[in-house]
Image 1: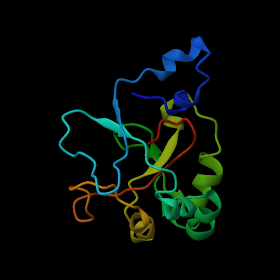
Image 2: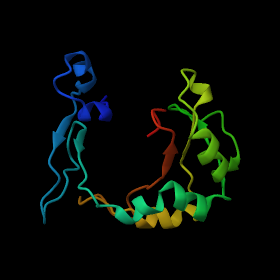
Image 3: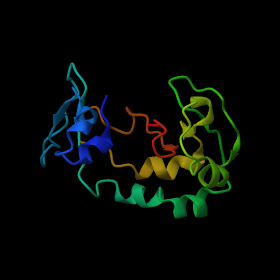
Image 4: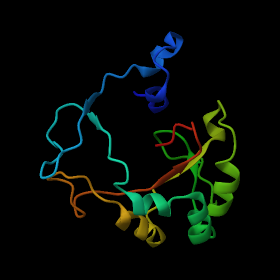
Length: 155
């Protein structure tokens, strides 16, 4: 498991070095004409180049989500590997109230929106630029969008 914030830490602060431990291999983003390896026997991390999904990034800003999707119904659930504790609410309420809360140690008090597959989300899925790999085609992948408050552990 990797702590992404740790990657930005000041190297001179030895008390925080434990945050940087990560045993997952890091690989370079493929050069032009190359593809990501899909036959690896172990997981690996590839940092996506800045701007790669700029259209989707712009669509996912707080302001755009509230303006374009705020009145849509969503189903936030408890953070965890099993989807439970589901609530029905407007996306506006989730963004303005749930995402603004401080993270609670009790996972039942943290919620995230993940796995919303309705037609409303189709423009977001369509805007996602797939990585370069042989298996990464629209008919072979499942694209889902997730929203979660900072430090909730949501994907």
